[in-house]
Amino acid sequence: DAMVIQNPRYQVTQFGKPVTLSCSQTLNHNVMYWYQQKSSQAPKLLFHYYDKDFNNEADTPDNFQSRRPNTSFCFLDIRSPGLGDAAMYLCATSRLSIPHGYTFGSGTRLTVV
Amino acid sequence: AQKITQTQPGMFVQEKEAVTLDCTYDTSDPSYGLFWYKQPSSGEMIFLIYQGSYDQQNATEGRYSLNFQKARKSANLVISASQLGDSAMYFCAMREGLNQGGKLIFGQGTELSVKP
Image 1 (cartoon, rainbow over the protein chains, first blue to last red):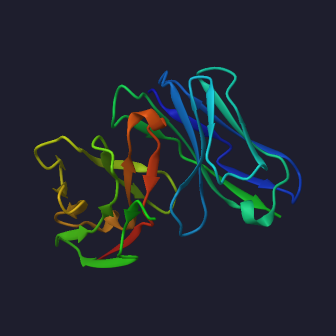
Image 2: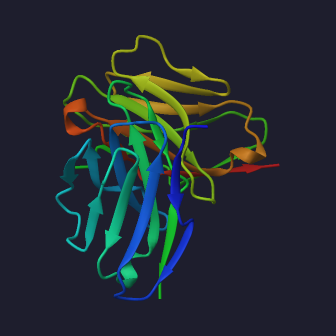
């Protein structure tokens, strides 16, 4: 089945140690999004790619970076994780020609120790 | 300013009864879409229902219906015949114009608990 896959499902990283979360899709969607969701809060958009065009949200910290080497893959890099970066990270994709066609991955739950 | 507002942090409903979860939104874009998602404790986002701003009729999907009142800018979710498995967090979300990359903006969520 076509889907959005996030790896790993759970990630534990040390304070200050760079970490990369990955997202892959088999839907051939042209837009990929990264959301951060802290406990009991709404998902918050960090950035998105429209094809190769990177779009950063104004309040996304510089500590967060992203790469999209091809249509299928998108990575979230946290350069120096702090305790406040512990959260669920959700990847989503969409094809803008289908207004309601969003697909979410299962998320990566990040713990910072 | 909040673009999506869910005023009910938590709701309780008796099994087999109907429940309405409130959502109001704010946008000046004439083209937008409204979504409801269910998020169980496992964390995945499960799509429930969608309403486009130009849709004439309220959306329905099985036990889910969306009460869309455009003039009031509200998009309430109605779950009929609640089941124990409906206990979860529910998020209302809005997609503004497609020229903004179609990003979804989420409300704060409502935690629904279904009592046996």
